[in-house]
Length: 441
Ligand code: 5CA
Image: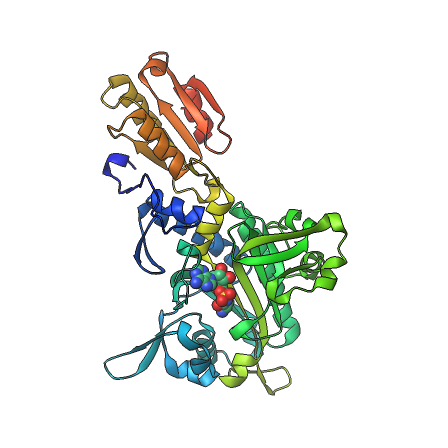
């Protein structure tokens, strides 16, 4: 992409109402624009990152055996009346009436819809287990939308729903999601701590939140330090096997957010291993048994010939919130530092003298070679002064910056800088291209 043709409305200063650094940087980097309280337009640069984050979530769900579908944003109130949640959900639910005076709502979550889809066609235990997920916009009329995409009213969520014949099956499904979540967040460069959680209006008795440590987080957590460093199991686990040892290795260590905190259990951790910190909840998983399947009559025939209400769980990831969490975890005073896996482009190509024959030719060569190797480039071919170009490149945080200027290119050289480490070196253009693409130029 040539910057001269792109749409990147960066700001020198963040608006004063942006309180936390991720919100400030997303606005300044031209990633989002607020349209109403808690409702954002995703500008081109922000959308590229959102799509990357979404794709990582999707790949890890697929790997764990979940199946993607897409449910509507608007749902019938009648389904929520069946489950008993229509009144209970309160003012966070955006209620809508259509021209036929039917009550609709903008879905804040989708347990009812997915249960309705399930019960319409699945009748036998032989069709279980199933885990259906979608990545869809949700609406919650939050009392205090704040911190940009972190607590929006309209936000993108991945929500998965598992269906099993019995509790043992449902716990295995829960464990698969638990492990998939560890892998998902690790791929984005995040350390997410699984903590015991309250089930809230979703209901049920087994639940974990996944919390990324950040000073600006809304959750207060108490945990064993080893949990933060434990890392993710990685993709090569036996997804059809027993994952409980992997889960138990983590749930054995104390970790809880405010609502679930148990001072005595925390005090039992050796003092040098205690950690009290703020964090951002990026995922939340629940097992709630037959709460919805009983209310909505989602039954399958079992091997005994009897009808059984299916055991369910639901598993949410805050996809749009993750962008804020990643920036909170990875930035410096000059801007964002994207982990390679979610960066909007792989390379910022900076032409210091547009119109100079040698600079232009070198940039065009690098641009073509990167694309041929499947890498994405944001090519700064504008007439902005060098200082402005460097500031923009640092602000938007692409992992690599290649700087092409008249002096060095006269000797066939360019400068290559790593955004995360700040390391820079000067080397022949072809060698730099080969380094970035993994192929000789
Ligand atoms: N039905 C369950 C799981 S699918 C559910 O709705 N869980 S939740 O309420 O915990 O939401 C799932 C995730 O969505 C949260 O962990 C959080 O990361 C994200 N989320 C929730 N509310 C917001 C919000 N207002 N803005 C941005 N992300 C949010």
